[in-house]
Image (tube, one colour):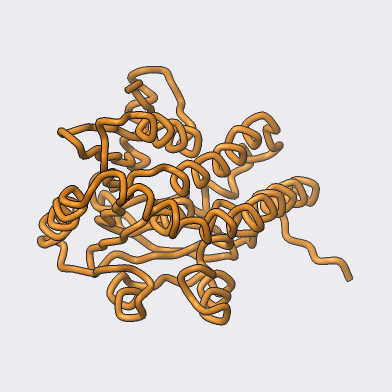
Length: 279
């Protein structure tokens, strides 16, 4: 397994753990190695490699530190350096989003999302791309694209995670949420861009479990061991059967979400970073 700039992969017997690094860790690694990674591409590459590894039967996806995955702050999203848009960077990001969801859906090994903290944007899309979801009960989920902000405290100061302008939830949220919620609730979740607690989502049956933070490791380990006791081939084929619906949904909607989000960014660039509606 290659080294990555935005995540770590460890394998213990038949279980692989993919740990998504937080932004400070990514920045520190880039400073020490001189390599700036693209998280979207690296997640796709990691899962593609794990799919091909016949010694791995179960994958656990988690975050490092206090949070599962946060996105950039509003200030970072609206910084002048965001314009003009680098088309090659956009291609790498958006094509990797498609690859990422395709391999997570198609790979024969079950993926258990261990949500150790807040999951925002692409992070929460990765959660819903997983097969089983176990979260710390205080973790917050938010798809920020349509103007959501999640205040978090880090190093004694508040960060406003997300952005106040509107864009299409193109990294998987708009494609996946309708599989988990009724159309009305999915549209509320996506369009209002407000945080939902893991406890709330578990009560609604959207995720499998919400547990106290100190019980998260134990609950995930319990599920992983149960999966390993199932026959490898029947378990793999069962995932492939159930995920035909997921694959069909992604084939019908993910490209549209990716395209509309890219169009939205290009429109913002044309308007100088401002939101202007036609009269």
